[in-house]
Image (tube, rainbow, N blue to C red; front, side):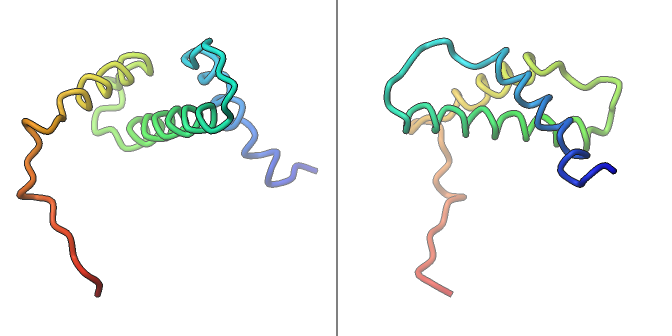
Length: 94
């Protein structure tokens, strides 16, 4: 008898396998830094899974490493000099 958790174990195993490939070997004693880096890697991996799932052209999906490199390049373009603040609005409640 296969339980629900056993059915989803494949995704967890794949995430752990990819995490080993891209996780920094740098040792840090602070658990908060380790946890933050882990969360960032998890977010990137989950966004890649969604990218693959909802791609309009499944045969042209980028490899995981290329996806990460493109994401880093895209995010590094944002800084205080080229960020468009006009699209960011704050509200004071409902």
